[in-house]
Image (cartoon, rainbow, N blue to C red; front, side, top):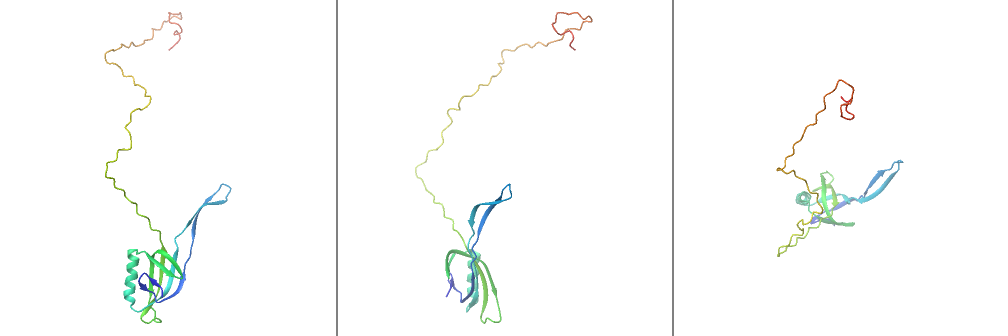
Length: 175
C-alpha cells in the first residue's frame, strides 16, 4: 500500500509523471535560432486515487503537510526524495462509500545547504593596509597673498584722422 509520509492511500488509480526541460533560445541575424543552455525543470507527479476509512483525519494530515511545506519522500512505482504537496483536491462521489476520490500533485524540490559559520576567538587583523603611497601627484599652485601684482589695462590709441602711421605697427585700420 502506498503512503504519503504516514498517511495511507488506499488506492492509486493513476500516476502521471511528466519531465521537462527549459532551453534558452536566441535569434541570429540570419533568422536562425540557437540554443545555448538547457535547464531541467523539477519533476512533478500527479496522483489520482481513493482514500477510505478515517478520511477526515487523513485529509487534515495531508492539508497540514501541504500548508507547512513538509518535505516527504514518495515511493510508489518510482522513488522520489524531497517532494512537497503543491495541490490536493478531493471529490465526494456516490460510487465511493465512506471515502472520496482525490487528485494530488507532488513537486520535487532542491534543498539549499546551510552555510557554516566559523567563530574565531583571537581578533583577526584587518586585511587591508592603509594607503601609504598614492603615486606621483601633481602639486597645485596656490597664489601667494603677499605679492600683489598690478594689472594694467590695455587701451587702444586714439584714432587719427589722417591715414598716416602713428607708430603703432599694424593697428591703423583696426576698429
